[in-house]
Amino acid sequence: MKTTKPSRRAGFTLVEIMIVVAIIGLLAAIAIPNFIRARATSQCNACINNLRQIDAGINEWALENGKSNGATVTNPQTVSGYIKLNSQGSVPGCPAGGTYTTSTVGATPQIKCSLSSLTPGHFLP
Image (cartoon, rainbow, N blue to C red; front, side, top):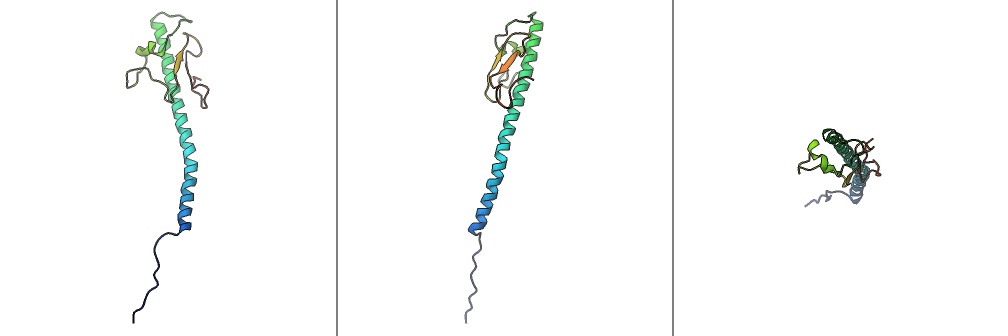
């Protein structure tokens, strides 16, 4: 006589799969905003460091060329010989896509980023 064993299929139930998907969704909901905030903060810090470097380059350019307070700096490329250039050989730009504008020697600030109104702000403290 042949005995049949009850066949039990191995696998996950729908409820178990839904619980796993819910946990993954919860972790993603927590991680993604933190990632975006960390990226914005790091871009802001890189922009501030670029502004600081260009500001120091403007001061050095003015000193070496005998410029006094109020002398106009036409653009950031004017001081390219006084700062560390990026891999393309030009003045580093804002990593978040902003543009830098210069003012006059001795002004506060001597250089600005167009994204200075964002939070966190892209401006020299």
